[in-house]
Length: 448
Image (cartoon, rainbow, N blue to C red; front, side):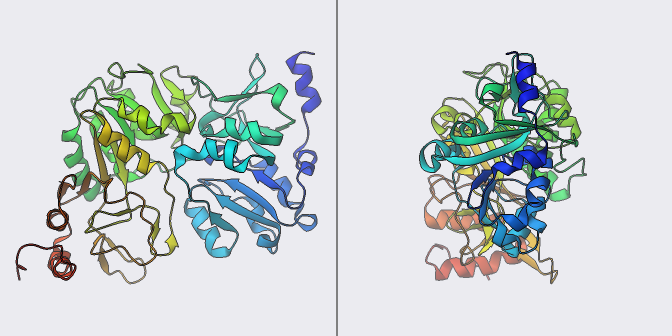
C-alpha cells in the first residue's frame, strides 16, 4: 500500500479521533506553537462524558478549549513542563500545575520515568513524499513522546514550517494511528517587533562587547535577549555560531546581517542548532526548509558535556530575582509561579565549562509593582519565601543590570555581596548593605 492510500485510511475527523481518549487517560498536547487546535476543541466537546483526563504540554500560546468547559478541573487537568502567561492564569484557576524539570531531561522522562502514554496529539507539517510528518518548530522531545504513546494523532497544518534536522525531527505515517486535517491557522506569534527599552539597551551594551568573533550563542526568551541579538546584528562581529534551546527572532536578524556562519563550531558546523522555535512570522518563514537551521531533540541541544566542547560559548538568559548569595530565581516570585527551569542550569554550566565561554544572567535592577506602582529591587538580601532557586550560587557567573556587570565566580560571600550591590538600583544600595551586615556577608563599614 502506498503512503497516500495509507493516509486516506487513517484520515479521520477531529471528533472521531478524540474518541480514543478515555476517562483517566494521560494525553500529550505536544509543545508550544504545535499544541493542537482542532483536536483540543473536539476533546473539549466531550467534557460531559470524560473525567480526570490528565494532559501534558508546555509554553501555551493560546488558551486550550479544555480550560473553559464547566467544572474544568473535574474533567481535564493540564500538567505543564513550562509556563507561559496563559499557564500562570490557569494555575490560579486550578486547571493547571507545573511539572518541575531540567529541560534536557525531558526526552528521558518519557522513555524512563513516564514509560507509557495513552494518547499523543499535536500539530505537524503536511506529509512528505516519503511518508514523514515533520514536527515543525515544536520538535523538542516529540520523538520520545511518539515512542511511548499507545495512540498517535497528528493534526496537519499547512502553515507549520518544515524544520530540517539531524535526527528525531519527524514521525512516519506507519507509526501514526490517525490523521486529522486542521483548520490551518497561522503559527502563533510570540513577542513581536518592539522598540527596546533604555534598560534593555543598557544591558545589551554591556554584554555585546564581551562576545568575541567566532563565538557560539544561546539566547533565552524575552525582550532583553532579543535586544542583544539586534545589537549583535548591527555590530562588527563575524563568524558567529548558534546552539540554542529556543530559536528566536534575534537570530534571524543576525543571519540577515551575515553574522552567522558557524564555521568555528567543533560539530554541526554551519548549522544553527535549536530544540524549538517561537517568534514572529519572519522567524517561521526563515526556518522553513532552511538547511542552515537544524532542529534537534532537547537532550542533544542542552547537553552540558556537548556545550562544554564548544569554545567561546556565550549563554544569555533572564531572571526574576537574584539574592546577595548569588542564587538566581527565574521561575517563581515567592510561591507565585511564573515560568519554569527550562535549560538555564544546563546553559549556565555549559558556558562556564567552555574554553573562553561566558554565562550572563541579565535583568533590570528594579521593577515597579503593577498594583502599587512602588519600585522594588530585583537584587534582594535573600530570595522571597517560597522562591525557587533555578541557578544555584555555585553556578552563576555574570549578573548584568543596567548599572553594570559582575562575575561571582571565585568570589567570597562578602565579595559577592559587594559586587552585586554595586550593580543594584542606587535607591536600594544602602538597605542592601545594611542587610548584608546583618547576614555577616559584609566586610567594610556601612557607608551611611
